[in-house]
Image 1 (cartoon, helix red, strand yellow):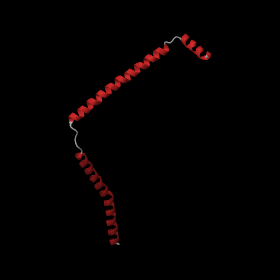
Image 2 (cartoon, helix red, strand yellow):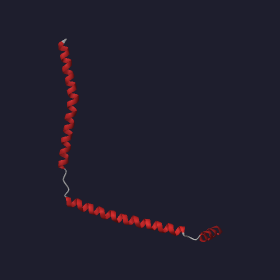
Image 3 (cartoon, helix red, strand yellow):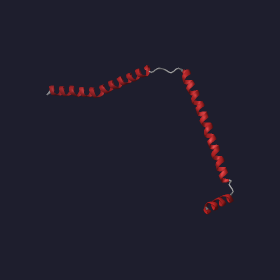
Image 4 (cartoon, helix red, strand yellow):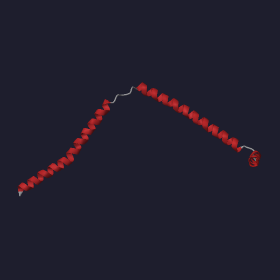
Length: 99
């Protein structure tokens, strides 16, 4: 009976070892692979980054100016439409009905 208990204990220890140690080993291997991949990536020189940021800033400023111009046009159109003489609207609708 003691041999059977010893065999069950050895099998249990093996199962526990495989279920705990194997995932830890896999995680460690993935981590080292990720670190190697990050080291392999070429570093972009700082002047290149600065130049790209300056181009982005210029583009954003021009977009902001265009958006403001569109907003001013919409405000102008809205003001023109709201200040129209109602008599002109009545005469225009009357002309459309008669034709």
